[in-house]
Length: 306
Image (tube, rainbow, N blue to C red; front, side, top):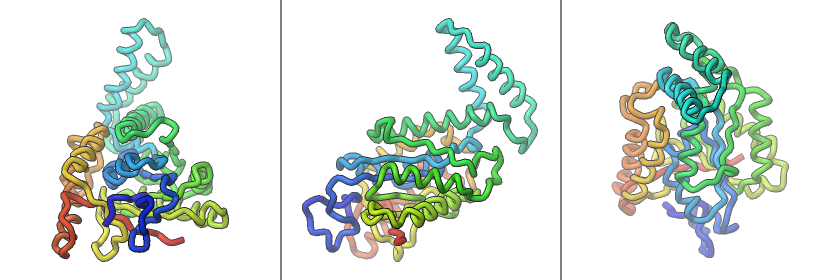
């Protein structure tokens, strides 16, 4: 159990899950969808930022298929109204809106969205992810939108992991040279996106292993959106106070398109913020039952050795 997920500076770290040195680490959080970071490790994300580490977040996919059609139309209409209000003449914007409206009005069940609608949906999620990262305290140069190609089919069915997906992942790791990587290890995601995203990271890390900077890089796996680690598996548990639980909830709320009945709910009827809070509270309760300290909530991590 540690309140210092990036390691506690100037401390004996022999019994701690993370190294004390370097005191300020470069951290790279991979988020398969644009909200997995805040849902699964929002408390830890905020703690790392508050404790002065250089935190980067990489959104691996656009998450565009999880946006409702009426939400896409609302944003497209906003652009038209915005242009009208400020006297901006844009035939292209008018055409895109007309095209989107015509398509969505006549859209059949399970019909693949036209590219324009997919792009609008992707931009909605991009804006929400950016808002969350700004809420945590990141600047734009610490936010990376990868838009991995395997995801961009417009359907639930994705392409298999490709060389380009792995190369994009390698390029980002090489650029940041992180001391810590956080990745989503909850493979219960019903559409398999988490699995492909994790495979891309594993392949990238294996390929980069000979690089000297990788000697100092630890890979932590989080869960939370769809399942949680078993208590016997956890190697780092980050406790949260009631205030931190509330701050995490507000961060999750930045993802407005994923609130109040989402497109892909799965078999769990709870909202994502409720799932996260319930899981984090359950983890803390298990630690309490084992006779350890009592906390409002806990986020759990397992280290992957490559």
